[in-house]
Image 1 (spheres, chains in turn orange, cyan):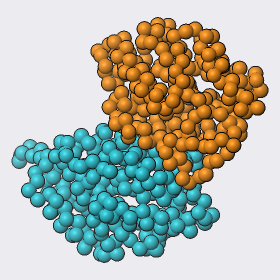
Image 2 (cartoon, chains in turn blue, brown; image 1 turned 180 degrees about the horizontal axis):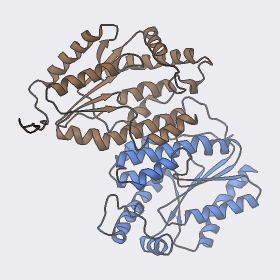
Image 3 (cartoon, one colour; image 1 turned 45 degrees about the horizontal axis):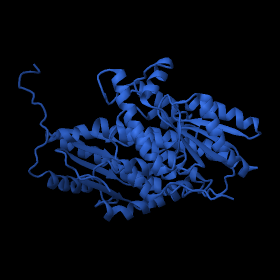
Image 4 (spheres, chains in turn green, yellow; image 1 turned 135 degrees about the horizontal axis):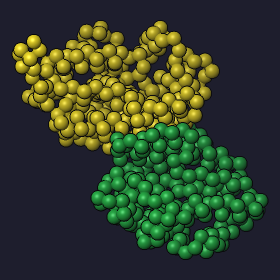
Length: 230
Length: 232
């Protein structure tokens, strides 16, 4: 049985010691192609006969309505946003991810707390404060960092959902227009992901390539985990 | 763990378990300060409009764990901190808070979260100029709550911890744990202990005297003066 490792104190009120499932995290900036890869991986793993559960940032039933509402207004400040996202993450971890892992599922997580830290720190939070919030977080089996250069992110943003207020960091107004602000904001995030890649042991994947090429790369790196499970 | 107060304003908070009489006292202090012509703002625990619907949902459906209970209350505090308390302290206002970070340190640890973890959550906040801690014998506090309210709510009674199937026993056990956490913080955070069993007026006199000493020689933000004849 593998050892359950947390980034800090974990859950002092509840012993968690048997989680046969695997936690696979896809990290990276906005428009890096994470959700496409989650879909491809899910189909593949289910085809291999594994139970798969997926989850993503800001999707908890507890916080989603309130967080959406807060983001629609103009009073959501840095620390509040940080802790609101932490609540969302904690709710999904305890109520979705850990139960699924206990049941032996593969959990594909579209982002983990690393993204929340990056966003906090870009907005001025103390890096250590932000990290210590996640002392309850489980250490994943694998974290893939889908890395895309800013020019490619711009192409994907424009041909995707367009520039979004938050994804362009307009709340901190990196520039006076969405395009420049997007470029500055995303470049800062990439710098932070690069630093975290070393700190948290991410596997960096060149995601400037086609979705199929990235998918094959991911498959190759996930296969050894499947052998462990079988 | 908390930051020093470098703002022009003053921060005064009351803490203690449910039924310790702290809310009555802070309201009296508020009226007294206002009557003296001070700029005063009052902030209550768990009152952010931005977070309210989420907390309500979690409590209603009983889906909060000790970790998410702690985080959602920290989010509520952060919103009040960033949008009200900090700007007002900077402007030179006296901010009175009915419960502060210490409520989370006591209650969330009683629920089972890690002491240092919850202290880190609130480490952006400042150490108040005065913390009035209302110490009350457990039975007295429980009796006060039992006689004043129809029903103790699920999380207030700590029912989520499974301490007892009986609501009153659960409430008592939970409050006992919280009380122990408060007691251990007296020195850590320099609480001013107020004996809750004293008569109401005596407690208020003590608080006013201590507040007066803290505010000696301090001006703060003026209140706009109303010219005579304007109201005619």
